[in-house]
Image (cartoon, rainbow, N blue to C red):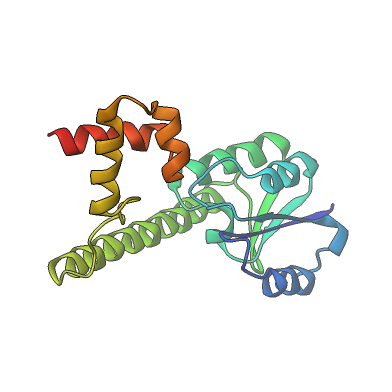
Length: 189
């Protein structure tokens, strides 16, 4: 039986030292820890997790410091549990080991996954509420335009002369061609 560790952080700027230390304290060898930097738990595309799941064999245990490092949605957690079940492996969340092949282990895992998804939903709700309050206070005004009003007027003037192509205008104003088109369309309307 082998312990396979998995750690994840959502941003490249975050540090995995605490998660690595927790996994080491749980008995996972450093060379058996797979990591993902800059991958959200809500996305299934996580190369480190894929490597960890590929390394798991019958009788092994996949170890994560906390469930939210592994999955942030019930469907993703169930998918991972099914993979572990098909391989005859267990899951350890912190010091607690869950065997997804047993009804009690499966139930605990599903309950924990539900709470992880609930936490994500709460964060999203708080973010939306915060953005709404900021917008009402006039502090959230959307994306700043690429060009000032004077630059937009000059772009239109240059375009109307017929001497400048869209590519020329794109180069002169250091903006993309779609931005030139949007600016011309916006000014015309």
